[in-house]
Picture 1: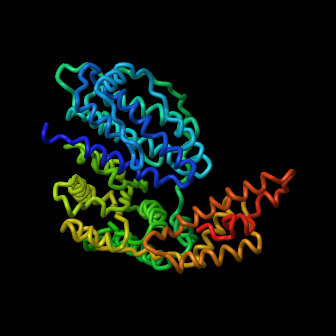
Picture 2: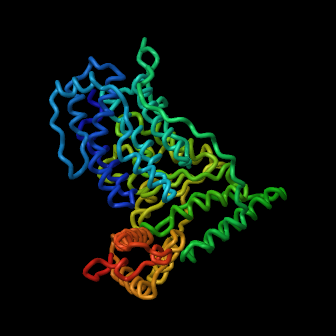
Picture 3: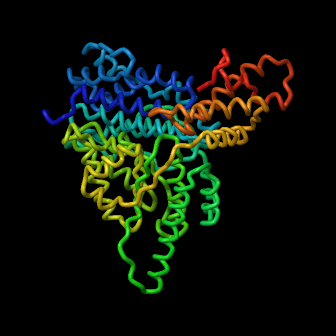
Length: 477
């Protein structure tokens, strides 16, 4: 048992995943609701996992794991053995968390994928706690899959389309000798929605026009077009029977958050498909939590799962430097890197990997492994948006969402966003900061317009200076 993960390591993994998910939630009230509720729900679901395995085999180690379920800033539980054992024995029905409905509502409004991302994270976390005894049993994996099916069915019911296959727990299960098949879990289910007809794939010209339509990124756009020209000429040389020198199409995206790295990666995946480099053209986005498991022997499986989803498209690893822990040579992140490197070789004709993150940290990441240095030799640098570009982004958000800026509101935002750019530091979020400002302005406008008896269409759309500033007249930033 000495090789099994400890309760403190479980807490660290749990807390990191919760913090990463909270960062994905743009809406402050939704983020707060998630943070206040998630620990309680997770404790209940973990009891269900252990019941599915063997409710009578609860050990002191189970109690330690249970008491490790708390997010940063929240109070740690101090449950006793009898409380955990009783909770396991009495677990009855998986119920989706209350905040899951709010996540789905937000996804419908904004076109995001928070609900499906939470469903994936729930699978990984429940597997983490299923491995309290060093193995994920088939019955535990069956329970986890059934919980996941309930959440995904609700997403399907709401018409929230998946951008990647769901994680399945049974791929991590190790059956014990003589173990019966996994029992069906009692859970409320939602009817499946019929699949919508496939949309026609965009042409290369349409994709390049979409790239040109992005705000700023002039150097990146030029580099992308140069890369596509190189790919097209290579294919022509192949068709003409001419030799084609080896070339790596894997990329390093360097720059601060909110500079469009994920957007460009998604477009590149489709462009690579349009020119025949990739068979499918999907983008699979992961970070450390999507590649590294918190228990021994499972990181390779988890990383392989992510790669399998990406074959035929692009595997986009955000904050890739987090996979390299200079203080711990035995960190599971190194195992994930080896899996990715092997697959880059095995599927070199139908898999592109893009790693992304802060400029200085990405250089350290690439230099940390000779295999990375040899495969990643093309670098795209994403510069910060300047004041005028930030204002262009704000205007586009207004237009997309049916809002207009008054003349005074326009002047205020131009000044405010220029000051935001001029005073930027390491926490500057580029387009993310602009989105936060926009959402705060919309909330203030709603408070103001709701006091009007019969607001006109123009009043419902217009953002005034008081909407884009705090009550004392200071900027929202």
